[in-house]
View 1 (cartoon, rainbow, N blue to C red):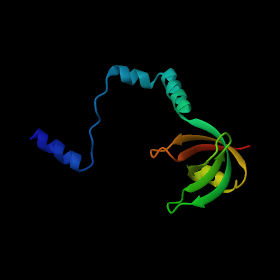
View 2 (view 1 turned 60 degrees about the horizontal axis):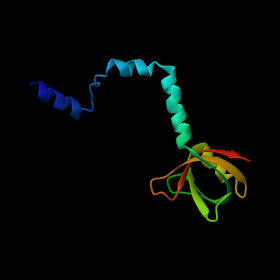
View 3 (view 1 turned 180 degrees about the horizontal axis):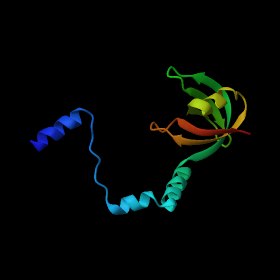
View 4 (view 1 turned 60 degrees about the vertical axis):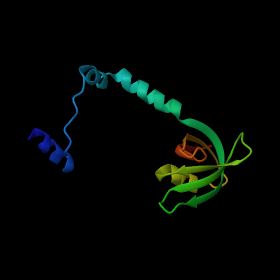
Length: 117
């Protein structure tokens, strides 16, 4: 009878919280653990100086910019959303320093921050 009721609660979209060990609960309250995760995220983000040469809007509202990388020979595609996208849209032929992640395809970059230089 218990197994049947858990199946129905999962179908209804209700999920019971998973039990967590005491060490994990203590780690959540530890401020040094939060700082370490923030530092890790900062290290994963790459930084580049680029000049925006072409800007387009995609069908889903994102900004797609062709940028010339300062130390590169080819143009790089940079995708951005929200405020970062707006900054790139208004920055045609301007120089930016961007924080980015490489997208899954390995070709395009996803801009996280953009600062006009």
